[in-house]
Structure formats: C-alpha cells, structure tokens
View 1 (spheres, rainbow, N blue to C red):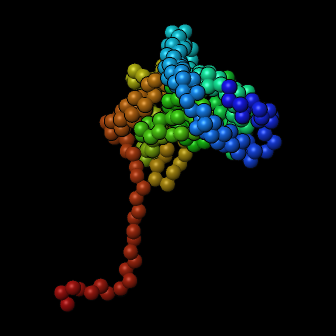
View 2 (cartoon, one colour):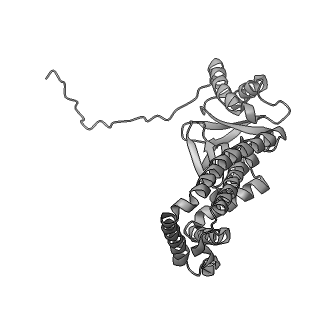
Length: 305
C-alpha cells in the first residue's frame, strides 16, 4: 500500500471548488511519482502485474463489447439503441479494468474515485453543452422520434439518419453531404420524419400556358400518374390549379409513393410529365420580356446618306 494515500484521509473528501478538483489529482500524481522513484525496486513486481492486468483487461473488454454487440444484433435490438449503448458499455468496461489496476498497485481506490469525481465535476461544468447533448441522445433513444435509416428534417437540415451517437446525430443528404447535429438541439426542435409512414406524398409543380386547355392538361397529367407503376393507385391523385403566375398557370400534381421509391418516382414522373405534355402540344412557358423602343426620330436617317 502506498502510505501517502492512506495517511491523507482528506483526499477522500469531495472537492469544495473547481480549482481544488483540478489541482488535487495533479498533487496526487506528483506524490505518486516521488514514491515510485523512492520505492521503485519494491513495487516493480506490482507494476508488471498491473500492466499485465491492463493489457489483458482491455483485450477482454473489447471481446465482451463485441460479444454484447453481436448478441444485440441477434436479438434484433434496434440499431439506434445498439449504436448508442455500445460506446457507453466500452467506457464502463475499461473503467472497471483501470480500477483493478489501481487496486493492484496498492493505491487507495476510494481516493482515486473521489478525485475522478472531482475531475468529472470540473469537466461537467466546463462542458455543459456536451452533457445536454448526452441527455438529448438518451431521450431520442427512449422516445424514438426517429431511428437509424429514417429520412428526417431537423432545423432546415434533411437527410437519412446514419447514426445516433452519445453526443451527435449523423445524417447524410441526397447530395452525399454528411451533417452532424447536436442531440440536444435535435430533440428540442421540431422534427419531420418522412419514414414513420409507409407512403409519402410526392408533389410536382407544372406550369402551362394561359392559352392551353386546362381540362386537357389535367387529363394528360392524371394519365401519367395512373400509368406509373410506383404510384399507389389506392390513394388520391390530384391535378389542380395552384396559382396564376406572370407567364403561366401553375398546376399542383400530387400522388403517393412508398418511401423507398420516392426519389426514383420523383425523377421518372418529372420526365414522363415533360414527354406527355410535348406529345399533346401543351407548352411549358417560361418568363420572357418584350422590349418596344419608341421611334425617337420622326425622320429616320438613311445610312447611305
């Protein structure tokens, strides 16, 4: 046993300030260093066995973590819970190994835990945002507003959820971008989850000329929706006038498709709409400007003069 730890019971008392919480572990390490220099020969065997316990313990903790991970997969536990829980389990297992190592060295484990608690308090005060993110992650796992694989919108950021980690939720967008969102802000703000229901509404806006026949255009567009294999024919399909723009009558084209088919249907229906309108001589107008220049000279000058 290392005497300076057992002879100083005040080290076991909780720190009374952040400064004390930070300086106490430093002073303890200085005393440990002095003791190792003075009594190095006497503790060499304990040090070797402690290193052995550390190496083997970390190896075993990795094996146990992987075993728990595989077991969770076999039990079909939600991937969001698994990705959130495994890092925490890994930290707990390694902490247990470190406590065994400290005990083998003859150090006062209670003093170490007290000092560790003080450091944890200081870190916690300095990283309040991270603690809020950790709490947000737990709430996301418990209440499940979304899970890994869902397509969500949060704070004007949208994409597919790749993972829910201890502090952050990771999304990837259709453009291949990776978005990292703090768990606290995700949970405390409105979330749109497109993946909760099997079907999602697909909205397209199509402009036709004021000179075109609306009824014909509606018939053509409804036929596009009726003939597309990815459109759910059991739900309402809509083609109606959305608004009157400067150069066009804008139509709202709406139907329902499965979430898994959304983007495939989105591109294909856009393409089919263009083909169908062209075949029926229905124009898609675009803004244009006509300039009329006044005749400023009553007698135009002949360039030959």
